[in-house]
Amino acid sequence: MFQRILVANRGEIALRVFRACKELGIEVVAVCSEADRDAPYLRVADRVICIGPAPSKESYLDIARIISAAEVADVDAIHPGYGFLAENPSFAEVCRSCKIEFIGPPEESMRLLGNKVEARELARRADVPVIPGSPGPVETDKEALRIAREIGYPVMIKAAAGGGGRGMRIARNDMSLQNCLKQARAEAQAAFKDPTVYIEKYIERPRHIEVQVLADHHGNVLHLWERECSVQRRHQKLIEETPAPGLRPEVRQAVCEAAVRLCREAGYTNAGTCEFLMDEDQNFYFIEANARIQVEHPITEMVTGIDIVQWQIRIAAGERLPFRQEEIPQHGASIECRVNAEDPYNGFRPTPGRITRFIPPGGPGVRLDTHACEGYMIPPHYDSLVAKLIVHRPDRDAAIRCMLRALEEFTIEGIKTTIPFHREILEHSAFCEGRYDTTFVERHWSG
Image 1 (cartoon, one colour):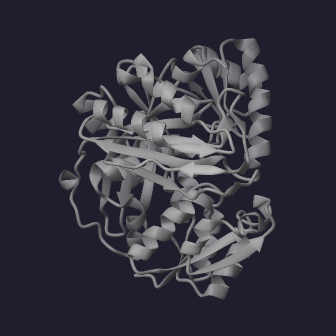
Image 2 (tube, rainbow, N blue to C red):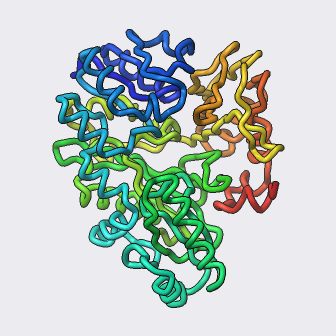
């Protein structure tokens, strides 16, 4: 096992990794920007190294500064969390070339899965369904028009190196296709330094289902069941739950087995997630893979009893997964609400500032993953996530009631948050009945 790990991230996920390390008896080295220097969560670390100014590109995205901190602290490994450099294969390669283990998959797998065009081809080889679309990148508008007419409108234009909803546009006819191509390429170039796009058939009102996978270095690839991630706004997830409501048992088994086949084909190790779209008949199609820990991993931990972050570390250290697929449970139901520093009634505008009052919820079945507290200053430079509120109860109805009770208890003052919006969603009849898809928020809350 590692003796000392550097956590190359900040906020909630950094604290989550700190705790996993502490329980494994591993020393923790934290890095921080000047904006985070006085953040209370850093007290959990054994050592803190400031790596630069507030802007991410000068601190959390600066590979040289992070490696220098790791070498100064004499760490065995680096955990990247999610976001920032977590899915950067060059960072993983640099870590390993410096004899520092990267707690994540091989860089070759990251490159393969990080490019959506190559990932689609990998899925085909693994006999995993993909959405009909272009066989590879679309080079010209003429080629795009031909493909769109063949598969039929509407179509989705996607950035090959994309993520987080950036570089994505829906085209419903020839004219909008040409405009959307230009916009998607420009956004992809700005966001990912790669203007490459491809085209897929757009599935109307789909569900977004993802499967958590763990894979060790001894040939064991196991799924930890599925998560429903369809409550989204502009492709950004708001609420996740597991099990996915109303999923037929044979479909649940098929989609989970498809994720395992894909990860085997990619030579994947460590924790990862395969994401799928599902139509109204529960036909599913692979869309992308995330080669990192997911924001919503706690709900999987709650229903399986498996600490995914600890197993990320154990796998990187060479340990073998000790359980078989049939031994992994799916007990009860779990829901996660992402509480963001945003004003949901003013276009979800970010609301950085100081938290003047912070009263966390508690009681049976409630888990709160947060780095925030009373007096904490939320900086304007980073993601707006303040907390992840997770509940786990014997069944879905009980989980919804528990979440509503916890949201009512959760008090954050000084800034606007998404707490009241989450309550609206969980009280909506379509959510309560499990009748929702990725268009749910836009259809019912057009603002």
